[in-house]
Image: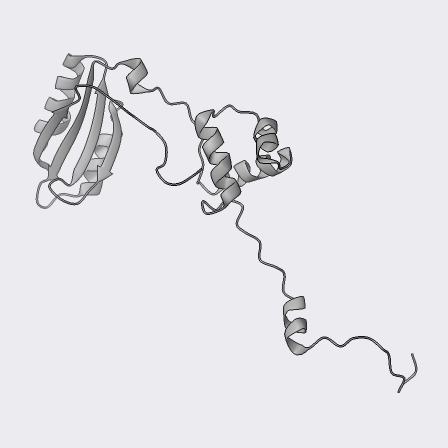
Length: 182
């Protein structure tokens, strides 16, 4: 093109040029705030073995999209697909919640780590209020539960006090994240 010739092309203003060079931000495919991710999780909570093709058809997206989203959520540590025995169906002989007060000079985290290595401990939550830790214990027999209490709770100097609340009847035990996932 010769110098001085005018070309009739629309000239972008400064704001348009500034944004034209920036890539558009996409939503994080592993975000728990993403509506599609919440829908995928809700379906996998109902059936963790559901085929990606079935999820894709229900949500009106491609199977590859579902595969990529599940992979991204797993990689981000947001999603783990596991098999969990429902204590209501298994009917453990002993199901109890323990309210623990940590002894002065001892670490709540250290107690939680010690108890988490016990196979009968299925839930540990650091709480505020009356207790420091809530610990759920399920056991196949009463003697095993009593042995656990004696060796892991009552004979430990890092636990100031413990209240044992034995389960009488389990009405609901939902091993899923709480929140509006649907």
